[in-house]
Image (tube, rainbow, N blue to C red; front, side, top):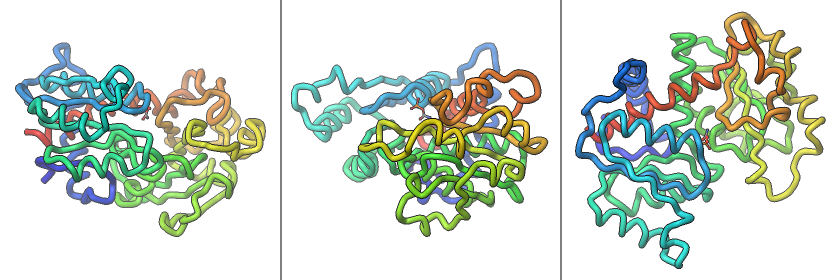
Length: 308
Ligand code: CP
């Protein structure tokens, strides 16, 4: 189903394709736990990581995923490339494609750039996050993390909290969670909401306290300071008061419920230092490191299904 397909947004993935990715991820998670974490599945394939915007998790995760599948992966660095000499992004792509590449992974700070690239070249493209638009592989790894904890999506309640308007993770996660049957509530004040809220078709609350006791999943978004061309929230204190996750709120969460965050966390803003350093039962609610671990296996599954 996914053979040779580009992964640009959640909308173009069917429920069957998503289920296929999740199923395949199980076997690659097992590979990642082995002493020798490598299979020959993509030997001879060449993948290029094209990141025009900073990344720790996504870039490293794709690199590890490709290497565990025995593919060759090249990390293209925009800051040390001929882009700096004035070469256009499309001439850069043409140059890379002339070297017989099988797939490219692209991150860019402009919404829609990855879609445009995928329309102009004839090899599969994976969107590793573009502007405020989409981050589909983040949503897939988030969904897989939820599956590992709850097994079934039906009846689950997720609350997505924070900077909705600037977040590609919010767009992709909300669409994917709803597609797979999870009930989603958005938690944000009006200045952090986009104008087209009807698009999401979800309930909206303004304070995390409105959902903290009832949600199975509290999904904390990062405050996207780099995408804010002006200050859109009055103060950190105000943010903590209405949206921040502190120990008091964590303790109110129901049994079995979890906290997620795509990373990197702004400690003391979305999530308090105390919660980030929690131990014991409270720490067991935090899925942030598991999200990263699962991200490698999900990306292995995607690369395998597209290229094998
Ligand atoms: N979650 C995420 O996309 O993190 P990076 O920016 O570190 O890749």
